[in-house]
Image (cartoon, rainbow, N blue to C red; front, side, top):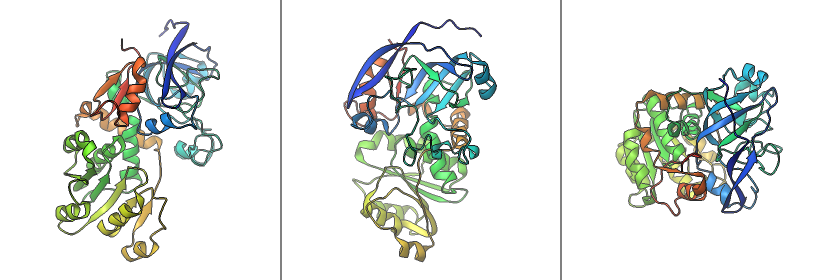
Length: 369
């Protein structure tokens, strides 16, 4: 398939904290191992509002939950990626070396070239400097440059682009709730935070065969909590109107839970203590808590496994795409808001609960008038 490309394309970029501009750059010439993607849609990730207001990440081209059609391919890229022009793909944000021990296991998130925390200078879509060639390096754009080490997933030709943008967020949920926490048949799971990752944990836990899934959030999360039962949650709890410990113990008849997954970031020492109370003997906890000591004594007494992490494996994203494509769940209800390039600022703010209320998953369509 031969596609006549325009000479240039528009891209929305962050020029300063909380500031977006639309710029135009030439479509870059590609090398043998590169390609060009026509962006169909780009979701706004849960971390995007934080990066947007940060003074660290600038100037950058944001947007990493990308769905698009391959419109130009070098011969080596065609051989490596096993795709053809005209095929549709979902991107992961990582640009890994693809030769280290982590990459060879499909753990691109831990590659030294892509690792957000331990890497030398993390290379990933959504955090790249657009002032340097090839310029078109973020997902809030009409076209994107695909370097040789792009991490791609082929998707069906008829999958709605907005649903495809859920792959990254739901992939995190698959990774955290099932692959990291070993959720399976008969398990009782408590998930904190009903964002994209939290709802992804609900879906993954349901697909893994969990017997009871409890999702907790706040009053501001009501649209997400109300949707959660349609995605597999058995019980939802508003922690601002109900006591978390009391409600979970009521639901589980005093037994507690097998798995706790906190997707909210750093829950703080007080919340961590609640999770420890709710954990059954032998339970697994997935948390990020930086302001308290490791609860070694409680871990020993209850024989707990406490883990943390971030991002997802290649396999987790593939599983997320399988769930999305299955049609078993009304995931279109997650895609509540669509914005054009001119409203990228509003899309990011909506994801952070600002300016636009009720957003569950915001999508940027670069071709929206």
